[in-house]
Structure formats: C-alpha cells, structure tokens
Image (cartoon, rainbow, N blue to C red; front, side, top):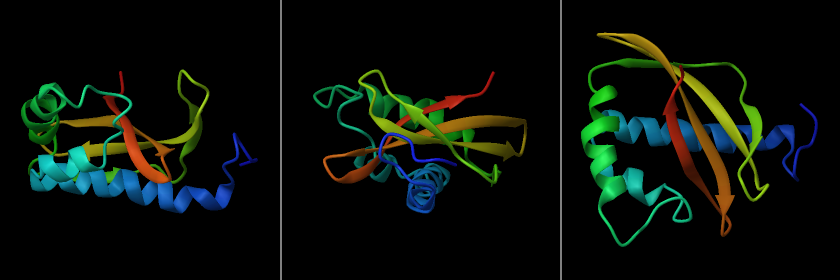
Length: 119
C-alpha cells in the first residue's frame, strides 16, 4: 500500500483495531460505546436516529455470530476528500454475509463513519 491522503501502510493497524472494536461493541449490544466511536460529522447528534439504527438494525445482525476479517484494509476517501480506511468483515451465523466499516480520523480521534452490508 502506498501513502494515501497522509495515511501510511503502518496506520492500518490502529484503523483496523477501531473497526474491530466497533463490531465487538455491536456483538455485546453496547450502543452507547458504538455511538462514542461514531463520527459526529456523519449523523445528527441532536436526534436518536443513529442510536435507533444501531439498536434495531446493526446490533441484532451481530448477536450470536462469529466475525472474520479480510487480511487487508483499503484506503478510502469521504465526500470532503478526507482519507480513511475501509475494512471488510464476514458474519458467520444464521446467515453468512460481508460488511464494510469505514474509519476516519476526526479531531485527532479515530472514528467509524459508516457501516454497510456488502451487496
């Protein structure tokens, strides 16, 4: 991996750990910790919409399942051309499917900006 938007290959480990910790919180049903790790620039913090999505849609998908991770992340950018990393995981349980978690640095802190099922 070459340098991308100021990110270097050695940055992958901390970005990956952020994605993995977010999913561990989802597996534990800890919506508060998931929110604490989420980008405040990607959702309205004055409403409970993200809390509801996490509690009703994300957490149930990770209950009682095993998650494996692709060996490498990929550099990505958001709409403002901020550099981040995308990690792909696979859920093994009632169903098997893959998902992506995007991690960016925001105000000096690594945050999850997006989680989505892979289609």
